[in-house]
Length: 154
Image (cartoon, rainbow, N blue to C red; front, side, top):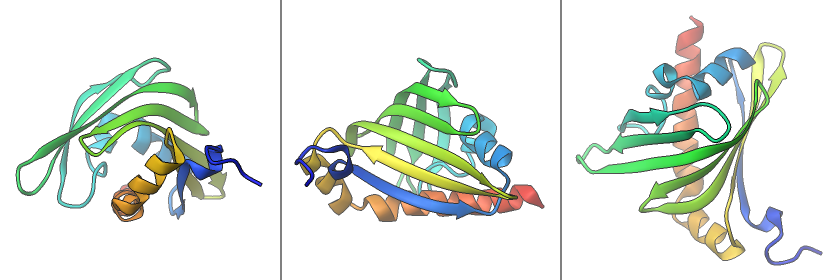
């Protein structure tokens, strides 16, 4: 029986098979020249303000919505294992604060199994974020990533 604040009760997960080799998927996540093409929901333009891709390094991305409003995603990398995982503390103000992003990569031939976990401080906060549209929002971002990866393969 799980306890109210067990990790499983505080985590939202999206798993996707990406039609691209693991090195390309890794590069798309770790290199700013790739990130700007897919980070954020459709219609948003992303600007990389800071990108220190190392443990303890900071990242800060501004996302401009079609209506001109800007929101910022920022965080600190806490664990990086090449071609395996990228873990980061993150804030997406004003919507989401104090979460841990876990981007996990697994080679599957010429494809990549990608798992994205967002760990929240409490079960209640996790449920609130899910109701705010977590799966639609991040799902659209990863659809953009998938389309970007296919365009880079050709």
